[in-house]
Length: 97
Ligand SMILES: [Zn+2]
Image (cartoon, rainbow, N blue to C red):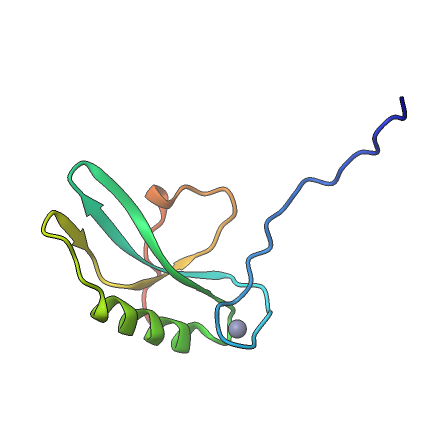
């Protein structure tokens, strides 16, 4: 049996959600969501360094149009640093400039 070559560590390359943009995203647009005992960051999109504003604006529109169940709580949509391997629970929103 042939020996398999060392496979490079698989890295998920996140790309910007802005239409027509394929740059690598460094920012996650998300809102803290909770329902009962469950908590997570609800992902509204990914943005590269030049599309944070339009992706954030679009996410806020979608968020405003979203119907929320009675037991659900959704916090404000904000920008989060996109760091591979970091748990959502450890993410803190980036202050808006
Ligand atoms: Zn972009």
